[in-house]
Length: 157
Image 1 (cartoon, rainbow, N blue to C red):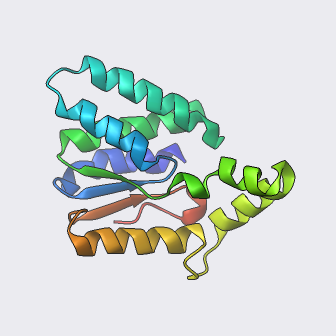
Image 2 (tube, one colour):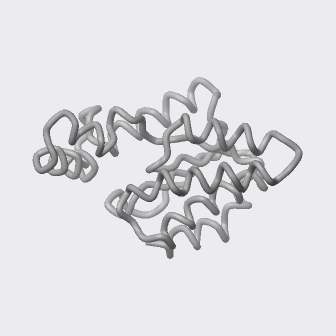
């Protein structure tokens, strides 16, 4: 999975002034990253990125995968690319396990993440709708780059 992030990192400069959408992060976390990037120093950048990486480690992916996601945030900033969360906490694994219990919650969460249905509820459907709405409102400038997990296919440009 880190191969896709490495490819994207090498090509991200082509999408300068665009928007990058990422799985596993939530807007609250990315708002903290944007605020840190907006200050002149880099000390707070590194502290916030470390906090974000720690929070994202619950996704079950490797340390290398999660570090590459954090590195993409830094690289997006260098290329004036806005960063956006594909999802919200109500669709998190924690929310599913709280609602349905550990076993059933995990199954429902995984089914939701893997769903390719255009039903407004599966992850891919929800994400496509969100990206298109934000793009139409002008809050997510073009070009648009979407980095979902391995189940959602390659990076969408």
